[in-house]
Length: 49
Image (cartoon, rainbow, N blue to C red; front, side):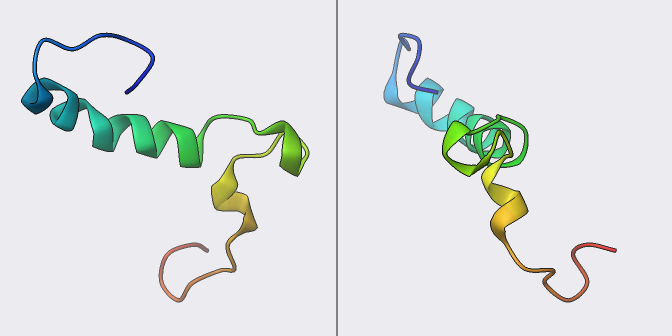
C-alpha cells in the first residue's frame, strides 16, 4: 500500500486491507525462511484444517 503514490488518504485506506493480506499471507519473508508471517501462527480453532 505504501509502495506507490495515492491521490488521497481515502484511496490509500481502501488499498490497505488488500496489501496487508498479501504481506501477511503471501509475501515471502527472508527472516522466517521465505515463508509468509501467517505460517508463524498456531492453528487457531476453526481457521485452518
